Length: 68
Figure 1 (spheres, rainbow, N blue to C red):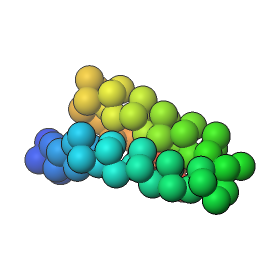
Figure 2 (cartoon, one colour):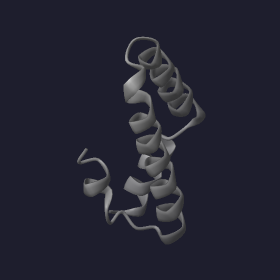
Figure 3 (tube, rainbow, N blue to C red):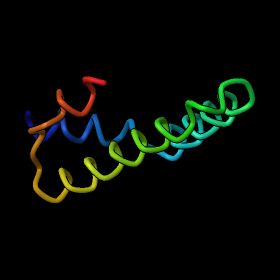
Figure 4 (cartoon, rainbow, N blue to C red):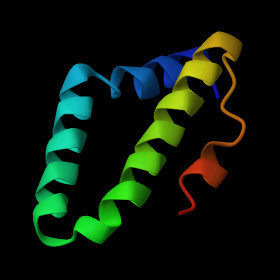
């Protein structure tokens, strides 16, 4: 992946994205609370992946991350 594509991906992980994601998880928790732990783990994996890939400027593993 090119640097510009990586920057585009990272720009989408803005505070707005995180705010919306947490609000969606909250909404799901009201009716389907059993799904929340798995959703939080996936969010954690995504944020961990982004942090690692920003350092290495690599996109390896992106497909596997989102294959859930």
